[in-house]
Amino acid sequence: MKQKTLFISFLYLLGFGQYESQIGINTTNPQGTFHIDGAKDNAATGVPTLAQQANDVAVTPSGNVGIGTVSPSVKLEVTSPVLSGAIKIVDGSQGAGKILTSDANGAGTWSSAATATKAIVTATSTSTATTSGTQGVFTYIPSLRINFPVSGYYSLTLKPFVVNAGAARDTGGYVGGLYLRNTATLATIQIGVVNINPGWPYGGYGYAFSSYPLEYIPAGNYEVGVITLSTASAQQTTFQYTPPVNSVVGILSAQ
Image 1 (tube, rainbow, N blue to C red):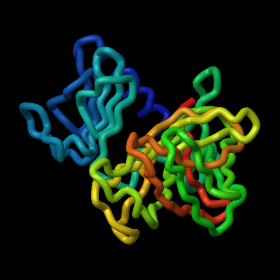
Image 2 (cartoon, helix red, strand yellow):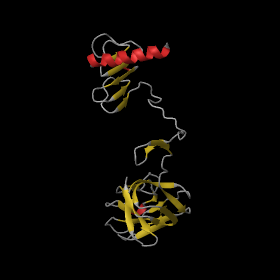
Image 3 (spheres, rainbow, N blue to C red):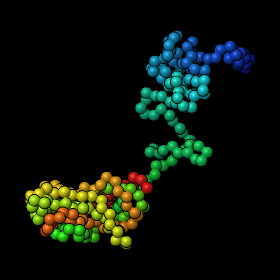
Image 4 (cartoon, helix red, strand yellow):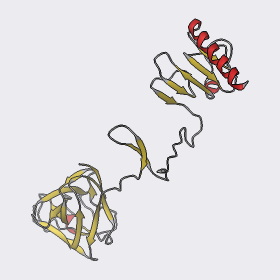
């Protein structure tokens, strides 16, 4: 008897489709070629409200499928007021913090997120360094070494702080550049700057070198130093920077 009922229902739908361009289940007001009103709460006329659409499934004449919306703009559109997630895919590869990735054929599965590439401090020692009073001469922080594993644009957080700028107390102030120097090629890259106001006394006022937000760094090991950019003579400034070994001072943003 059950099989006969299903067969009759199928024939009815087949015949109904020949005369009706839209099919509605639980609604007399279908909004697409096929429309299911899950809660049977849609009005008899007009477009259902967003709250009413939340329990609807619709198929448009172009073949778009909407879940929680009667007007999907893409092949599958899911609209949900639930913030904990609108879709759930359980195939054995799921897990906390994973991202959905596809193969060459577009088949998707859950994968672990890529680990961020980081610039790491490999050596350091507690020390201070004093810049030269001569413009254009580098001074490097003793023993501080940083490894950049791959070439690319890094977001840097290197901020040596000034502990004494007594010689900057003149009308010119002090301008210093923050640099990296490749320990193998000796090539230098400016990655920041500090500007100390004229008349600034001895340390304790919070002046520090500011790293540029994004800088291209070729792969390699580097030491950190500063250079006097001021034109006035005797512009000596003492600075200090001692990040712990294995601390992160840069994150790769792009290659």
